[in-house]
Length: 552
Image (cartoon, rainbow, N blue to C red; front, top):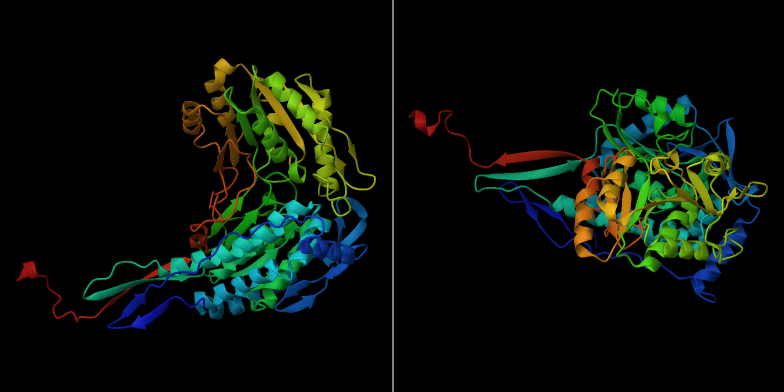
């Protein structure tokens, strides 16, 4: 059913355009008591209890173990080793490169309709029989609640696979003009070399997309999953293989960040980096040196986090602003690239906003999301994250510019638990307002409402990031002015909505400045980044004379 486009030979290449496949966003299940999805998930969670899954490197279709063994721990119960895995060394990474390159030409020549069918089948598997498994592994391994796992590991990943397939088929139909004497066509080739996909812990869907999107477009990929998301990443990888992805197209290569970065960037065949993560944190973007050293043209498409804002105007609906800010700042413990970590509130509304913030803050439950479905968020991802966030909490308690209004406790005796913390800052350029924290800390700056325009300029210049932001206002003129002055402050901008929750095909995601290259995964333009288009002209009338008419 997916073979919608055919190339017909009729005095040269002729393209027959047929309707592309129709897809819609995957429905988000509710997991109400007594529902079949809740029962399936609880069974999958029970199956993982106390278990340690062994996850090898997969190179050239073969499972490989090295002596460098590591364990992924459950964030909310670090005594539970959810996965045993190993690091690929330099020799094994180079073997993976060679295995990928050996498959590149055949995979690139496979019709896009056939490649798309693999991802559509994987989406169907995730939507049905494998949904509970991937959700459970995301919850246990990354500490997500039911709904956060559902919108990520099910809905978003399914949407990535289905909409990317749709966009790839539509791109194939995007052809140049032809004339009577010649036919023009565009071939969307894969890149010449291999792509390195380096995925983060915080979204199972992002891992599947970072490796999957380039593969869909005819590329071969080395996928380095996050050490703290091995369990779910490996589940997604196996689903792709079961859906028909040839073994050598994507190599599954857990490895040390610097060693992986050094090895892949030293290869003359390294042609693209697909990365999502943090700029400053160890094991992330800074561990990928020598970018651009390849002799081939290098495609680099990183997404590197943000210092995202909510600005509340005096015309705002206070309840909506408060609820949206609490969700954005504290869902998944503030560990979303798009999470709000700085809130700007007008002095006239601040008493009301503060009262509502503190009232609702007291209702937030932090705990084990697998045992208590009433948990709003769980532990942060690991000991390094816990220590970093604890350092920011110490700064909040000790700085004369800052006042802790609520929360701020932390305890790593059982899991890496951090209470949601609300801080008020008297200095809008305090480090806590400028630097990415990636934890459940929301800092508020209260401004005089008559200086709203100055506050917008402050928001735009406080940080070097440009990922997401939101304005809460009812005054249409204020909204228009804010959009104009904050034009480059956020790649995803929200009006009367929180700064998180971008949906594939509805809000393609990404930002600029040091937040990344704003390539908008989840939209139709993203896939073009993973192609090397070739324009072909075929002339049907022989050239009878080298001279031009004016020369006669």
